[in-house]
Image (cartoon, rainbow, N blue to C red; front, side):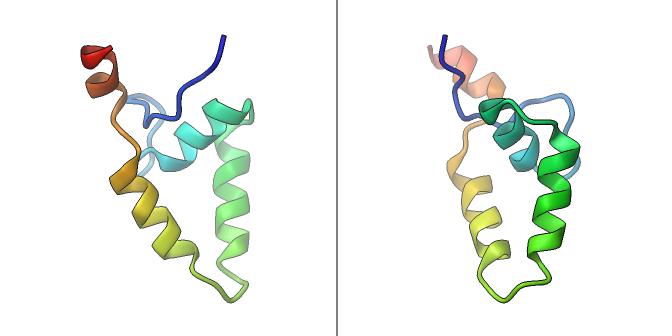
Length: 67
């Protein structure tokens, strides 16, 4: 069974991107959030990637309704 990359309705903090990534890769949402916050200390485009994933990843409700 493959897990789809969607933003779940439960367990969200902001947009559900970290919770969706955690669910997809079998990690805890807290760990993904911690890794994201720590990555903000490094130079890069982390915030832009987060915003892009927010736009690209469908909501769990919308995905369930279409498939």
